Length: 292
Image 1 (cartoon, rainbow, N blue to C red):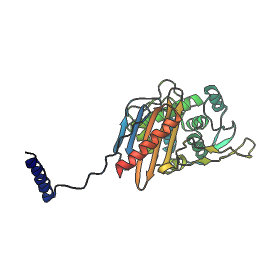
Image 2: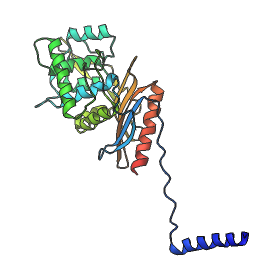
Image 3: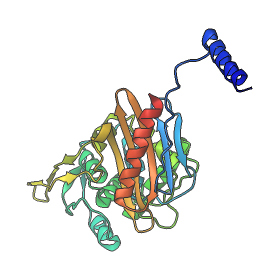
Image 4: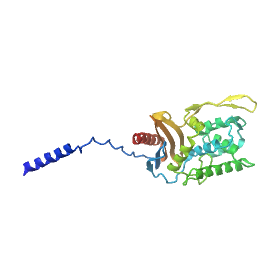
């Protein structure tokens, strides 16, 4: 009985070999990563294909990743001149003090270009730069009216981009009770924003030194604005924006390109900065592996 069974095994194996049914072993499957962030999303930025999701459509606080939309609205203005000078208002300083907000340390009365404000907002995460841009590109007779109008433009833009689970009530991510988005929506925004060469140049810059014009007409050399995104340059990382807050925890919207493979995504509500960095590294590596 044992001999017959062994013979059958040999015959079966031989038949398979003869038919050519045995092929090379399939490539090892790519293991889906586990991330600490409560929400995450990753796409192939070349074709928009989804590569990873974790609570990707759950609304969460976005902290300073909100500033991506602020930049998007500014850069979408018709006949935009990046060298237009904006005078820093006292209201901006008052706002920073009252909110204890992150700042690019802009000086009241200084004239700062729109380009410089974009760097101050996206690298140093300056809420003073964000407010100055909102005030400049909003409509109205007061700072309050203009910034409110600008936030309306942010929401109009969100709708036009299909960000169905997003609402902004601030220009900088300091929520007034109704400022939220999702990992999927923020990735949609990032994909659109990165089509702007100016935006792409700004967010991949590690450090920028602005020269502003003082009230007396003198030139002020600002302390360097260093990018809060420490992942820049790692494994092809091109940006895009960090965010953090007591309730929002740690967030990052990111983009990376390596060997012709491009990925883009977002993580929201990671427990700490180190976990956020680890999560994004996992997702970028996973994305490259899935595409290749």
